[in-house]
Image (tube, rainbow, N blue to C red; front, side):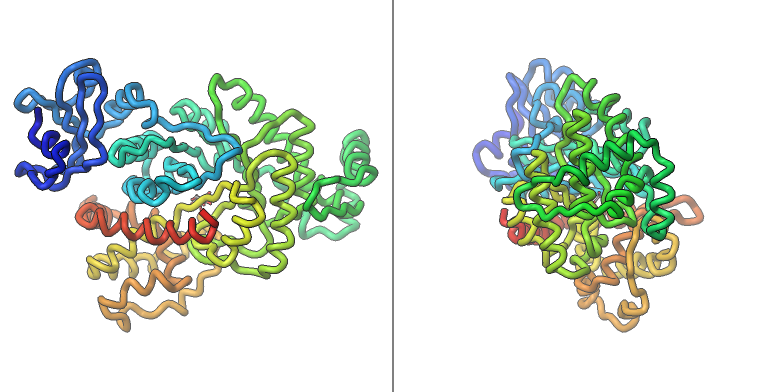
Amino acid sequence: MNVLIEAVRAGKVNEFSSEVIKVYTSSLTQVGDTTLLMVRTTEGKRLIVVGSGELFDQLQGEIVDGEKVAPLTHENRLIINQFLPYTAPQAFGTQVATMGLGDRLGIASPGHIQTLRGKDIRPVLAQQSIRELALTGRTYEDVLDAAAYAVLQEGYTDGYGADGDHLKKEEDIEYALRLGFTMLTLDCSENIDNTIESMSEAEIAAKYEQLPASLRSRYEERYLQTAPNVPGATLAYTAEALKKDVLIYDAAINFMEAIYRKYIVTLDRAVDFEISIDETATPTSPEAHYLVANELRDRGVTIFSMAPRFCGEFQKGIDYIGDIAQFERELASHAAIAVHFEYKLSIHSGSDKFSVFPLIGQYTNGLFHIKTAGTNWLEAVRVVAKVNPTLYRRMHQYALDHFVEATAYYHVTTDISAIAPLSTVSDAQLPEYMEENNARQLLHITYGLLLQAKNEDGSRTFADEFFQTLADQEDTFAEGLRHHIGRHLELLGK
Ligand SMILES: O=C(O)[C@@H](O)[C@H](O)[C@H](O)C(=O)CO
């Protein structure tokens, strides 16, 4: 039997062989007569496969002294999924709190698992939007592979989800579902008519009159003649507000129903279907939220969660911006509406919203879905700032030089002039940039440009050194995530 595996079993993990840098003791797994153990070697992570049986035979790898050393490939991940079902993603439904832990690098999930293990919340480890894939150059196969191997590495058997996030096009929906994604976040922003917000009351009335009379009378009967009764929600429709909401959301509701009928109802497996109306210029009033939810229920559309666009600003990687008293008033209604229609409220751009986390935990009674992604990338940047100041300075300067280009992808109100000039900051102070909102947003939204930057000779400007630094500092990164995401959970009441 492999000396490493025997050493792990005997609790003597420091008996490393020469090529092994680290043994992931939690990965020790027995499947029939096959034993698996993940290690990090000078060539990267590998699976040591010992024994015999189907799993041993099917895993692809090199035979060394009768044992198999298997790389963490996509093909091997699919085989492991078959033999260890908990390494494949699952849907969670509406009765357990869930947290989206978007990992743009493919190396954060072990720290996320260490943070959530044992808590009353489940991780959606494989969460990426098509926007993130485009900016990082990754695929959904890469995203699933990274999450599954992290689950194996950490010996995490409580289940995790996979969210095809902010999907707008049918081909992207088909792509994610074909790969086995277990959550689908339908981004309806392109079906929401934001021009209505800037119209006068007369213009709205005129446009509304152009709608079919049958549609108008149906909405008026359901929302003006019948007062909604949602315990805990304060809802008051006026004729003017109803006209506006119908013009803003009617096409989006039709889109939601069409996708549900074509892709969700026809599936032979459970999928958590989320409706995202958060990435739009129009804040979602509680009345608008109720109208969308009521129309969906009336059309037989069952959803896992709804992501409204809250009042104020939920910007990337920084705390809430806005009137917290108004946020609390509206949150109470949004949460009550979610309870009434039996789905979870989903909090997008959930990274670092520390000032409102207690309210979210309170009003949802701890039953929510919250999404993070940027803050996990920034914890990796923080590690670089701590241990590789030269690399951080190069990345920071590149981000400054390319910031305007990055604003095409994310809405931020960053004040670049407020960021301390690099020349005035000592190496020891560099991590403090991660405590300053403008610097956080600078590094947050330029992630794709930094990761995909190339030199004239085609070599990667930052990515190779960045990933090597994070590999060398794997424990530091995991500890940073345990601290930072742990703070999120603590304030959310988890
Ligand atoms: O950056 C993205 O596209 C995603 O991380 C998106 O922002 C996600 O839905 C989210 O809200 C993460 O906080």
